Amino acid sequence: MLRILVVVLGLTLGVPAHALTLGDLTNQEAATGLKEGLAQSASKAVAQLGTSGGFLDNAKVKIPLPDSIRRVESGLRLMGMGKQADELVISMNRAAEMAVKEAAPVLAGAVKRMTVQDAKTILAGGDTAVTDYFRRSTSAELTQKFMPIVRQATAKVQLAEQYNRLAGQASGVGLVSKDDADINAYVTRKALDGLFLVIGEQERAIRQDPVGAATGMASKVFGAIGK
Image (cartoon, rainbow, N blue to C red; front, side):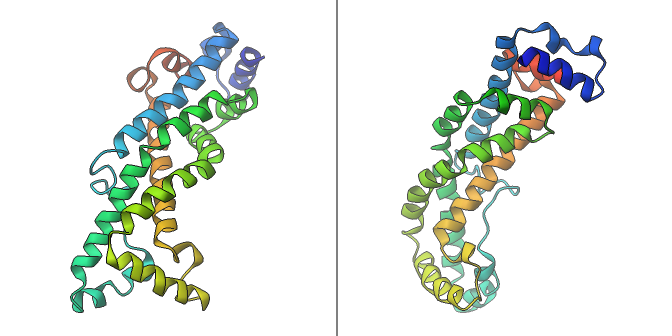
């Protein structure tokens, strides 16, 4: 069924039939290649972000102060709290780096649970189909795993506690969005955004250069899709 699917998709996407080497693969090989592609994208993303500086030193994913704090950041610095603001930024990003390490088994589980319908969606999808699958199937579980780690890290910073108290009050009257009213929820959300962004980068790399960016059956399958 999967083999027939990839041939049909090739015709739908305008790929010449003779160039679609996926048609030469068995169903098992095609499914294995897809799963390997997911696993490799996820593994590389976790390895990149789950290290010291993975978030803090990467401008694409570095977690800034929430907008509600940034609006008064200059005031904080004038009040002598600039050091605390810096400590909070470092703490938030270190928390994200530690939390992302917990993503590996969750992402691996999502790969194992991939269904034929999931495979169809990924094969027919664009450059972020793999990323979209991970976001859809793991966000809730990752949030549960990330939150305690983030909370433990930010609890050590005095400004985080002050922020939660003030932002909670401000949220009640609409001055701060509910999404930003708790520093731990904010960091967890930003950590997930960063993780999925990097998974997306890894996915695009595999699709654009299967031989250079992937190994095994993933290279073969994604190479065929790109023809």
